[in-house]
Each structure stands twice: as C-alpha cells, then as structure tokens.
Image 1: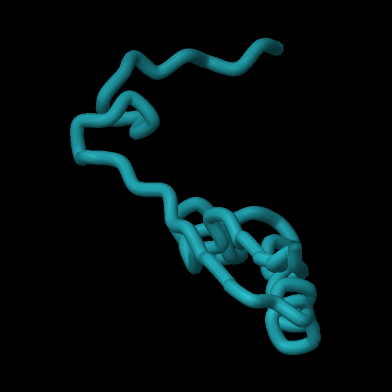
Image 2: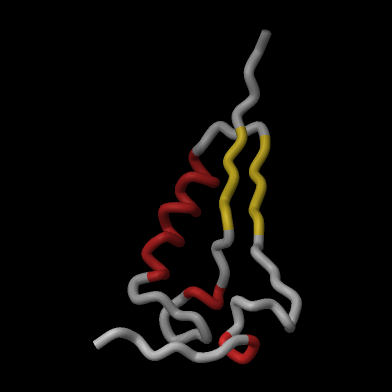
Length: 71
C-alpha cells in the first residue's frame, strides 16, 4: 500500500499580519515558511483552511462584556 502525503495549512490570514485588524507581532514570519513547505514539499494534496465566524459569534468583542485585564 502506497501512502499519500498531505500538507494542511490552518488559518493563515491577512488579518493576523502586523498592522491589520488582528495583527500579531512578527505574524508575517510564518509566510516564507509556509511558502517553502508548499513549494518544496512532495505533497499529493495541499489544503488551506480559513476560520470563519458569523457576525454574532462570541469571539468578537462587540458580542460580549469587555473584561479588563488583571493588573
């Protein structure tokens, strides 16, 4: 039996890049790594996922009470 190889890239979005709405410091450092994996891997399948929430989802601050960080 021959095995197949798949690369699954989970939730890499522009929103997580520095300067965007949900920017993560150095979030763009992952991009060349993912690109290198895609370009130089011997994959039978590459799957890219994107997380999505409806507008009323609790993950949005507007949909729940704001809690102050601990001091």
